Length: 368
Image 1 (tube, rainbow, N blue to C red):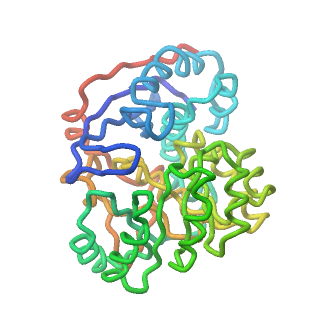
Image 2 (cartoon, helix red, strand yellow):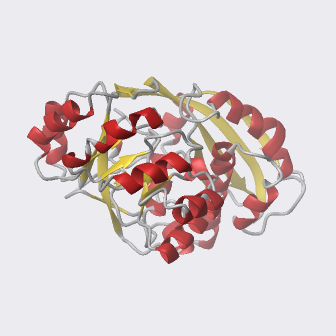
């Protein structure tokens, strides 16, 4: 692939509005952007989606920075990279740190697409030219105000962040404004087995799904809840690998799976999960992590795969940013987002804005 160097940037992006979940509040989104350069001047971009604090996964921007600098990028010096699929194998000896790995792998995929003059959608076998979009409402959002704004965009699904014990109140309030548009809520792993009856009693709300009610390592109680409820159960944090997806499906712990590139380590694993889910006929959807336009482009492309049949967390750029770091921000029209068709991830990075929002960086020169 003629890889020359990688540049890693820590970027700070202030959200238009604070984003609150039961696990944490995000006011300023620090993220890691990875650039993969070749000798001909092509640049591929990836995003490491870890948060500053370890409230979602153990990874943080600090751990990602250190893993990239001292462990992962030096591994690229030991073997010539011929295809993006090689990255997964090169990093296989490093346990965990999926978000750090995904940041590199997605940048390499973008670079490869530009070198081949092909869209990443085409390279991974994407089927859809546009994908359905859902939107997430945080605990601090004014539901009435937000729904009025988003209903004009035609979003296909609303995901609500809720507080335990106040789910019914929040959902019934939202339904006053949302109408018949599907609604789900995200448990963020905050429930325990003692909440089984409480969750079961929410069955009459006719939710599209309940996402990740129990801990990420708890397939058993997700299975138990699924056996007792008509409401579909979706797993998010529990699925970090193809094997996790296999367990979730074989143990009947999930009706649906939310796939995030960062959480599973990049396209190679995400595509393996997709292929297994397709055989098992389990619907998928693409989750979001408050990404910049770079990460959002990768998400939209992932969601173009055939088994991603449910609306993803693919809201448009202005949902979060006054100014994104891509030149043409993503837009939602009639509830759908167009999949980029140009080479690589198909978006142009606004280099000046990227540099303005970068407050530290390092370069790794490939020595092979």
